[in-house]
Length: 561
RNA sequence: CGGGGCGUAGCGCAGUCCGGUAGCGCACACGGUUCGGGACCGUGGGGUCGAAGGUUCAAAUCCUUUCGCCCCGACCA
Image (cartoon, rainbow, N blue to C red; front, side):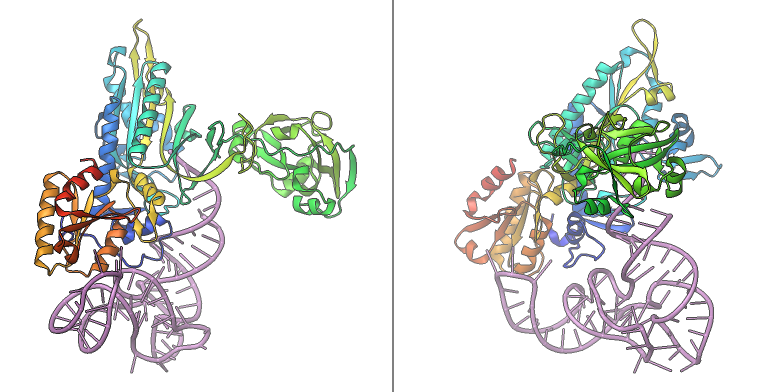
């Protein structure tokens, strides 16, 4: 392409409402423009990048036997009603009616429709397994779109769905997808981690997420550098660093007006690890007392897995239920209330509320002074120990760039997607679903590869292989050489962007660095007169002067074409 | 949905407190000089000051309502 004819509206300054690096650079370099909150236009450069990513996705999906199809994004309500998600999902689903007042929604994902198709067409175990995928637009009325294309209301997703006769078949497809995803991210030049994740309302019991480390990410993962344990903090297990057992004997201590942990800790001159934090929750089945160590926080989602839906009790409820003010509640002596304690409290001797106004108790031990059900209910933190091997965990901020779910028969049962097995028994199809967001891959690639001057694309997903930069468009030799090289490069199927604009050298250099094409071929007047051309690496900024006749071979070697 | 911030030319901003002819830089157009890291000089075009209502002789500025966008949180199938 000729730069002069391509629509590349670069910006010297980014709009002030952009904050994430990838957002700023995509705007400045002319890859995207915003239409409204969470709605983005992909300009020619941006669309080329998505095209490159999608090509990789297709290759790797095809390679594991998945078949590309295309599904509507407008869905009749009935299908979603049959799985219960029409009602289960709240404001995040775009809903509308047709002219006959029939309910529809815009597809947030395609489990329902894929399963509907399978229910109509799959009859026999002989028809299975099948894996279908599409690269298709999804719509979600996000509560808070943010960070450019990282969280939008309309986005493209590669989603695939596997259909198997049994768990074993699902395991195989799950593994194939995980392996394909590894190849995809590697080819896209991303640093990534596979972590255990919370399946949430997708149903099924087993899922993994693929995460690209970046400060712009919304999720956090706990990682063990020693044994490789990796999990979303939403479910990560950890052991808080142990503390020396003070072996106090139980005694009540007067703590007048000291209610918060900080106040008591300062008053008694012991650090928060020596305290038990008692939090009263109201679950659907009544009050529950949750206990974590003083320096820890209760993990709502972990707790929810034990006691179901719940909310923190209000101050008046605490007094009604426990008969003591919130600041002085403790774990002891509750016979009618369910007590859930974090595992780390099994060891050690602690200070806790005495269930008596203005008093705490020092020297209480688990299974002697109080009793509880033991679960990991604290939020994993940097520096905690790995529950598998004991090494120190790190917690990192990440962008979710893909996920894989074992759905089981949740959708096939609901939509009666069944088959007859070899014995003539009717069985629900065993399903999996697998998603990747190409725009998030692009954004994550930028987040992981940029410098103060702009983007540094991994070769595989750069909008062009090389940028050809003739510096002086008024010099006949420069222009002629550029045109000839341009043709030769294209003949070799190398994607080349030629900056043929009547611009000063500085402008061309700045734009080239901003746009981030990995290789720059610079045609300067003086060098040309000596038969030399510069080949510059965007990342290292190293420049090699090459004889004119060697340019093609050098570029071919660089791009692998 | 809760908390905070911002809407003035394509972009970045000043002006708003204290009402009185709407400004600056970049970008854009034309002319000239320049030409290897976002040039310089000159000339010029472009804004219902997010929208509606109100107060006032007079509103970008004060009041009310409303819409939009961003950030933090909740949510995230």
